[in-house]
Amino acid sequence: MAIGRLIKDLRTARGWSQGRLASEINDAFGTPLDRECVSRWERCKAVPGTYYLRCLSAVLDVPLAVLEGEVNRRTFISDVAATAIAPVVASDLLSAGFAARLDGGPSGEAWEHKLSTYGTQYMSLGAADIQRRVAGELVVVQQQLDTPQLWSVAARLMTLYAKTFPGSDGSKAVNWYRTAAQAADESGDDSARVWVRGRAAIALGYEGASLGVADLLADQAMAISDRPSLGLLNAVMGKAHAAAIRGDHATARQLADRGRRIFDMAGSYEESSDYAVPFWRMNVFLSLLLARLGDEKGAVAAQQAARRELPSTLPRFATHLELHRGLMLVRSGDKAGGVAYASTAMGQLPPEKHSLTLRMLMDEISA
Image (tube, rainbow, N blue to C red):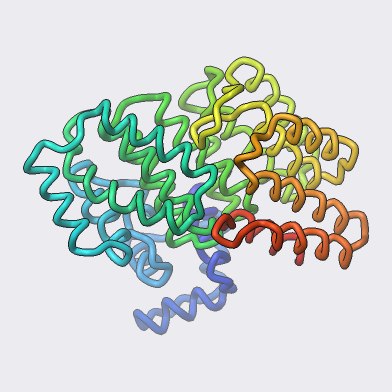
């Protein structure tokens, strides 16, 4: 099931039809592939063999290991992560990585402190700034993958790095989320394995992108552990958003109720970090979910609850709530008014504070 959903998500992320994907493979490799064969793969009526997995890897610009679901412990950071980082790092970062290896690099405790700092910074910095900083850290940490703790650190850094790409860009964001999940598995830490997958699921579900991947990672997180945790909460809410976007309102509501129960047992309350889900952030999740479900009363209640506790230092999330209102207007039939309302909200937030998620929400409202 997973390979079919993944092929479809990667194809649609590029805006390609099934026929276009078949043509791209034919042009590159001289094969006799047709649209119906792609359709069978995506409907899980057939599984592409090794040859076609390599063809898909090439034309969709995603590592073969992602399609095969198998990544070698010794090589996946250098073969997958490093090649993906290469375009955005300079030689000084590479030098820093090797210097860190020679010096032993930061301690596990120092890395945990770095993660905490980045989690807080993510809430207010723009995507480009976070991407630049975390890219440098990934170059360093890949030189140190000698302990389970550092595999866990790498997995959480990769998850944050993935958030700096739009979820609709399957060749980047999805690749990083799945690579992060593999790294978390190497750590042997179930809490990290659940958190990485759950964070990816809520990111993709909230953005309305790569829903097959969102479902897959959420299902994996829930299968690893049903113990109430922030990772499980993210997984459940991500799956709820995916269901809402597909029009399965009953499932979306059931998952939202489950998410509320998990939050009651595992919520973060006062923290403002990407690694936390305080009351106001849970209500941001619910606000968009209920807006997508057409539940105006519930969405407004969630927005009001979020605003009461949302820190004034996080204006980007206030803009999220305004865009949710814009979506509600569009869904009520006032498309021009909803788009205008959302555009005004975006315009009031300094451009350097914009996130890729906000831009994708604006696209959803406009569409």
